[in-house]
Amino acid sequence: MANGKPALDAERDAIVGALVPLVDGIAATFGPVCEVVLHDYRDPEKSVVAVAGALTGRSAGGAMSEIGLRMLARGDEAVDELNYLTRTKGGQQLKSSTMVLRDSTGSVFGALCVNVDVTAVQQAQALLAGIGGAGAAETPTTTFGNDIDSVVEAIVDAHQLRRGRTWVQLDRAQRLELFRGLDEHGVFAVRRAIEQVAVRLGISRASAYSYLSQARAATGTPATSDPASDGGAA
Figure 1: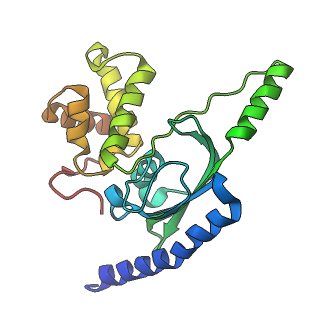
Figure 2 (figure 1 turned 120 degrees about the vertical axis):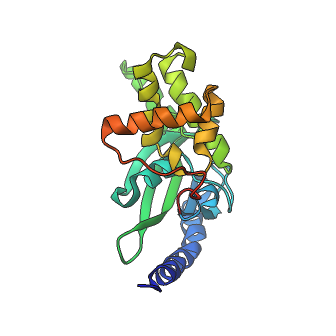
C-alpha cells in the first residue's frame, strides 16, 4: 500500500516519543549509577534519541554501540537481552539490558537500553572469590561511542587482538573467519563500513568486498548490495 511506510514511520515516531519521558524517569529512580539510552535504529549513525546518565559518555545524536550493531544485524530476529555484563574502556563494570522496540508489524526499529554501574559490587565479589580461592571471570570490553566510525574501528581492532595476529599474518581461512565475525557483529550494516574495515586492515576496498562475499557464501548468508551505494541500513 502506497501510504504504508509513512504510516509505519508515524507509528514508530509515536512510540519513540512516548518513551522519551521514561528515559529520565528510570535514570532518576536508580540515581547516578544508572544510564538509560533510547535508540532509533532507522539512523544507525545517529541512533541515540535520548540519554540520561553519564556511564558511557554518550549524548543525543550519537551512534549506536557494538551491542546495537549486533541487534541491527539480527533485524526482526533480534530479541531482548537482559541482565548481561559489559565493561567500558574506563574499566567500569555495567549490568545492562537491551529491550527491542517493535512496530505493529513486528519489525524491530529501535531499543531501550538500561546500564547500571556495578563496579563496586564486582570488586566485592572478586575480593570474596579471591579469599575463597575462586577466580573471577573477565568481562569483555564493549565499545560505546557517539561516533559510529570509532565503534567500527574498535570492533575490527578487537577481533585482530583476539587472534594475536595482524592481517598479513592470517591465512585465508582466518581472514574469512575475521570477516564472518565482523559481519555477525553487524559491522557491515552501516554506511561506509566496508571502506573503514579495508583501511583499518590495510587492504583494498575490492578485497574487502571479496572476503565479505566469500564469508557470507560459506555461511549461506544472502549477499547484499553495496552499503555505500544504497545508503546503508534504513
